[in-house]
Length: 102
Image 1 (spheres, one colour):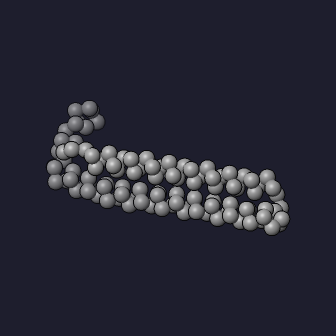
Image 2 (tube, helix red, strand yellow):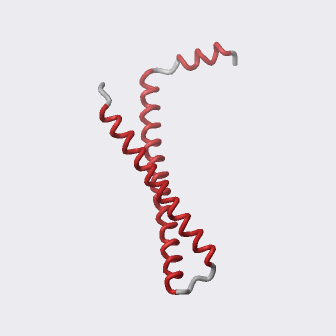
Image 3 (cartoon, helix red, strand yellow):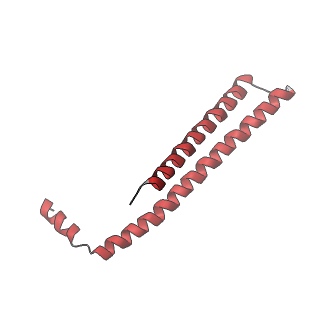
């Protein structure tokens, strides 16, 4: 198809169809974002739980591999810091949108 044919096929779409597509995309996009956020939070929670188990094993002297326990603790700390930074960025973006004048 020539370049002009592509342009004609795009311009043939009605405004109502474009608005329907936009609303469907926004609905699925929001749901996809919520699912991604939920899975990321669940992953951070699992990492934190593994870290707590490793700390408990270290405290009771039942640790099998000290290196793996230290890695689990550091991974939990890093994932928590990342989650907090993402939260802070999201809150700052939300506040900035609230200050935007229309």
